[in-house]
Image (cartoon, rainbow over all chains, first blue to last red; front, top):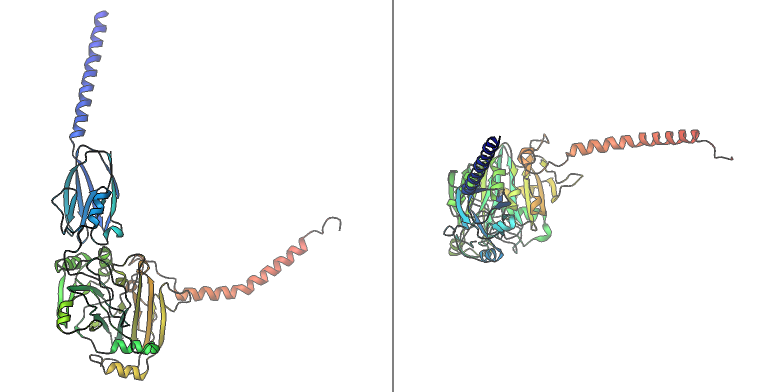
Length: 140
Length: 355
């Protein structure tokens, strides 16, 4: 009887360990899975105007421009956008948070956000922000 | 964030303007702003051919500007327009404003779009294109035009009905070298065989902010009084459109027009219509369809109304009249019924208590 109880207890412990290991593996797998967000631009509008991503992990943004005109995707805080509203750069691409998207093209960029918070992504080509090319990214 | 990478800008507009103080209609400036001004267009339709006359005005400045004008069909000829056709039409309907006319500007264009015709008129380089909205937009980008953010939707709006566009590039430096002064216009005359004449209006709002207005004059010369859609003479009114003139063209006007260069096609008798547009840019989401056949059936499609465009069609003028007549006929019948009901009610009402 006592021997049977010990065997049962051992089985339960083994099962618990297996469940714990499996859960750990699953969590690790989820963390390792790349985070991707697609933003489509159509008729000079971001179709996704509110997105959420985790902080501390690389996030790949797939920017799909369905228009025959060029657009930009610039993400940052208020001071960042204020600078770009008055900037003079003709083309973006050197920094992952400043991207020019040619007509009818798809561009990918990967960013790791360090802190939770909210940032806006805007197209700063003349007239495009006023036309509504603004979106908000929430970093959790 | 870029402020102007290319000195060449693109715009879309139609033509001309009517006052010397006004200039550069519809052209988009290097900072993306659109100069506001009144534009004037002439569309004559005779023997199945639309004669479309517009003018591009030298308004000063430097570099190049451009504009795109959608067309109902492929033009067989694009030449320098006559010297006084537009001004003469303005005089015909605004005799009190003699002395001040003039001319304005217009449009631009593509990569995989098919180039049907190229020509140069003074400081204007004109290209006739065939292509969808994407194709024309790409062609425009490849040729240095910078289209405003509403261009993709507007180009699709037109390309789905007629994939023909006129792109015009205006070289201000060349104009200055030619001795053109500010206010000098370059009229352009397109000869377009088509069964479906229409005048593009929505393109006039291209690049304009929501708070801006569009002002334009459209002159039509047709064999008979045309039916228009939207109908600026509708009893319900059409937002932003008004019928300023509708009468048989005078013999003197026809003779004056016929004496201008390229205007020998003007018939001996015709009907002159002037439509004035004065509306908020976001409300101008249609074109002006013309039925000059006498059948009185301008096309919903040519006007770009739903299901061919974003704006619902206005209530039919015929339906309005039918409803008015029906209401007028029903009114006396309703009155009789009301009186009968009241009389019956009086008979059934019991006398007041204590009476």
